[in-house]
Image (tube, rainbow, N blue to C red; front, top):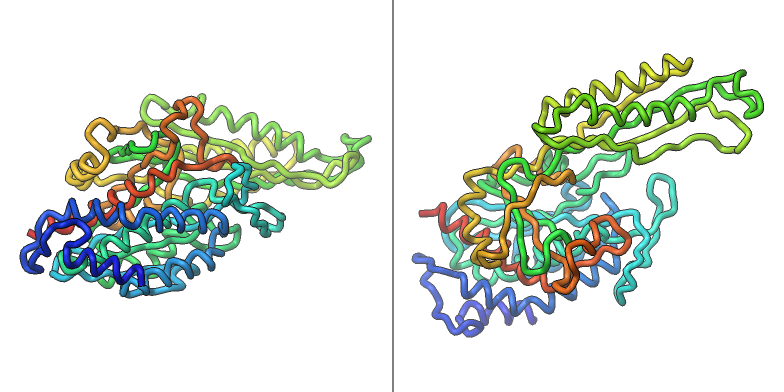
Amino acid sequence: MAERLFRVLIGVGLLTGLPLLHPLAWGDLTAEIHAAAMAVEPQVIGWRREIHEHPELSNREFRTSGLVAGHLRDLGIEVETGVAHTGVVGILKGGMPGPVVALRADMDGLPVVERTGLSFASTQRTTYNGLDVGVMHACGHDNHVAILMGTASVLSALREQIPGTIKFLFQPAEEGAPKGEEGGAAVMMREGVLKNPDVDAIFGLHISQTDAVGEASYRPLGAMASAQRFDILVRGRQTHGAAPWAGVDPIVVGAHIVTALQTIVSRNMDITRAPAVVTVGTFESGVRYNIVPDEARMSGTIRSFDPAMRRLMHTRIEDIAKSVATSMGAAAEVEIDQGVPITFNDEALTEEMLPTLIDVYGSGNVGVQPPRTGAEDFSFYQEQVPGLFFFIGGRPADVPPEQAIPNHSPYFDADEGALVLGVEAMSRLAVDYLQQNSR
C-alpha cells in the first residue's frame, strides 16, 4: 500500500510540488528524482539492514532474490527469476519509446565471520568448499542491492515520463561461484540479460571506504584489473618425516615455487606500463606432523591491466611451477581459469554521464581514482555494451582516510548516508542517459 501511495504522490506532483509533465514532452526530472530518493531512504536503509543480517554466498542468494523479486512485482515491474541460478531481472517500460539502459547490483556475501558489532550483524554460518564458515556482506553488496531496489521505486513512480526502457539486473555470484560451479555476470550474459530488449548502455556502482560518504570517484578506460585464479598441484612422494631422503617433500618444493613466483612481477613485468600482481592465497598439505605427504596444493590470483602482460604472467607461472618441481624431483600441474576481464569504462559514455555524477555529488566531491587492482565481473557486460562503473564513498565523515576499513574485512561497514545518494545517482544516470539519447 505504501508503495502504491508513493507512486500516486509522485504522479500528481504532490511529493515535490511540481506539475505533472505531459507524457509526450518530457522535462527535467532532477527535482522529482531527488525528492523521491529522499522519500524512499528509510525503506532503503531497512532493506540494507535486513540483507546485511541475512547474507548468502554465491549461487545461494535465495532469500535475497525472493526479497528483490517481491519488491519489483509490487512496483508493477516485469520480473524474471532464476537467471544464472538465483539472479533477478526486472524490466520497466517507460511511457515513451527510447533506448534501453541496464542498472546492475550484485547480491552475494563472503565466507567471513563478521566482527563489526552492529545491531544487525550477521551470525549466519554455512558450508563453503567443504568448510564450515561464517557469512558476511564484507564487500558492501547489501548496500548495492538496497540502492537498486530504491532506484526501482523511484523510476517506477516516474515511468510515464521516461523515454525508453530500464532493466534492473540483480546478479548473483560476483565474488565467484564455488569451485566446480558456474555463476556471475558471465552466466547472466549467456542467458541473455542484455537482449530482448537489447541494452544500449549499462551502469553499476560499488561502495567502499576509500572515499568518504558524499563523495564519488570514477576512472575512464581501465578502472579495475582483470583477475584470474591459478591452482598448482605439486606431486611428491610420501615418506616418514624422520627419513625425508626416502621420498620427495612437496611442501619444500611448494615453498620454493611460492618464492620463485614473486620474481614474476619484480623481474618480468614492466610495471611502468601497468600495475600487476601475483599472490598466493592458499597453501595446503599434509595431515600429520611426522609424515612427508604426497601432495601440496596452492592457489592464488593474477591481476593485470594489460592483456600482453597477463599472457606473460600465465606463461611464467606455469614455467616456474613445473621447472622448480622437476628440478627437485617432483612434478607440478597448473590450472588457470578464465577469470574476469578488465573493468573498462567506455570513454564516450563516461564523458557523457560525468555531469550527472557531479550534479548529484557536487563538483568538489567527484574525482578520478587511480587504477584499482581489485576486479569486478561487471567487466563482462562492458565487453558487449558501453558501460560505466563508479565508486561511492562509504567512509564516515569523521574517520580519516588512513583509518578506512577495506572491503573483505570482517570489520567492514558503510555509512548509510551513502545509500540515498546511490539511489539518486543510479536513477539520474538512467533517466539522463535515456533522455539524452532519445532526442
